[in-house]
Length: 382
Ligand SMILES: CC(C)(COP(=O)(O)OP(=O)(O)OC[C@H]1O[C@@H](n2cnc3c(N)ncnc32)[C@H](O)[C@@H]1OP(=O)(O)O)[C@@H](O)C(=O)NCCC(=O)NCCS
Image (cartoon, helix red, strand yellow):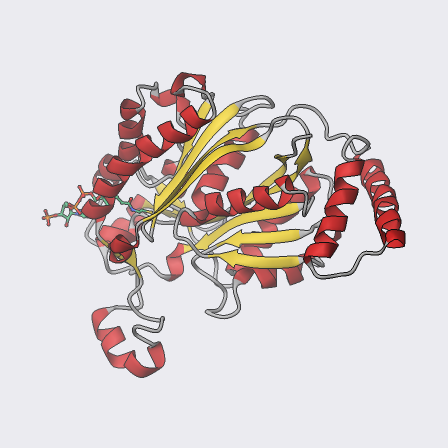
């Protein structure tokens, strides 16, 4: 019996504060015409001082859990894709787990703008192998904290946002059907923050860091353009063909939102009409690891993605990294009854994986205990 990781809940959060291109024109030597022509961006949302990556992640996660009809206590795992944490240590996922009141493992996945697709694929493995049942996968970014507001080449490009999905097991084909994860660390310096790590610790290099503005994001725009035009369409084609489909079979493409011009280029490379590509960069700019989930959640909310649809997602950026996947949106309700056996088995395997010795009595009790929990969940669904 196959087990799939279906998306059963989704939510998003964007800060109230909006920074338009005209606002930016008062800060650096730029203008709405240039930004629109080169990127398609019209505005971006910027966090308020009291907002952190963890608080924004929680704001996106609550509606996702509600939609999946789960409480935080039902979660088996939380993965947060993020490059702009509350602190350098610990990662933001543990703070999100605490703020939600969840009682499960949590880890942060740091992988540039591709992080959320990597996280989605990772979470799917835990579900497909029967280890876990309810996983929260968040993408959250406060890129504005690392942006050099004196550098017109980068500050116009980014924004802050969070988005989350819940994955649960299903026997119907759904969730990630095929995927590709890519890395080319030779391009690490195409998009990076030079200071703050072990190469240039802040405490030992404070003066030079300030003088060179090395605490801020540095970008090689042309290098990233070359990387994206070489990688994205090829990767999408590979995962689509691997799923036994052609680009024509994809209902909606959800690309990382870096530039509307780039998205137009991908559409031409894949010989697909541009209206099959979801674009919201004009509202939010590039929100890094939050970009793909934010676009997916908006596409669902706007009815551009429906049950049964097949979508292709691709993220790419710092690392250099890329990650693409073909996702089938689930059809119908998850039946607690049909998944009883697999959930009981999953709990048994999880205990064994954690090194807990499961004796015969427990092997019986665990599925029974699971049955009670699943019934409670089913009652909450009604
Ligand atoms: C960033 C990007 C839009 C810049 O467009 P570009 O055509 O490559 O622009 P360049 O950096 O070559 O700069 C061209 C000119 O525009 C100027 N310029 C750059 N940013 C500007 C701005 N915000 N406003 C006005 N002029 C600007 C440059 O100074 C340069 O002027 P010059 O020729 O007098 O020196 C483009 O490189 C891009 O989309 N790159 C990919 C970015 C990406 O994917 N990033 C994130 C990955 S997660």
